[in-house]
Length: 132
Image 1: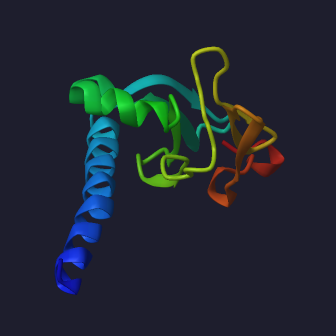
Image 2 (image 1 turned 180 degrees about the horizontal axis):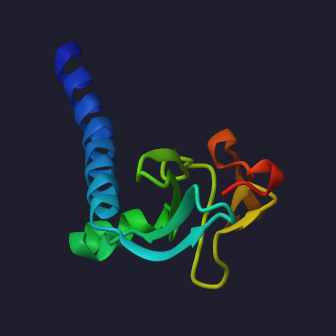
């Protein structure tokens, strides 16, 4: 085998699984169902909990599901603009069926296998002085 052939084989063996994984991950997220929505106290932001639809991809989807989280979370402002997402935090294992995302003192938090994680988002901070 020539050196360029070995390189092409290597790129195919490594690149094809990564491409398939990305395709399924993006497709499952696009078809994800909103499991729950939780607004902050001042109604300026909300957290959506999503369950990706890996089942749409058959056996390949089941394999990808083994190596990904069962859920992901997105924080939006009241206009529906995305502020933060846990979707691509690949080192975390999120879930949502037993516990839900929530707001605690202006922090958006969500359940993971190692406890709660989350964000302090300035745009979602509690309003001072009782303003609405």
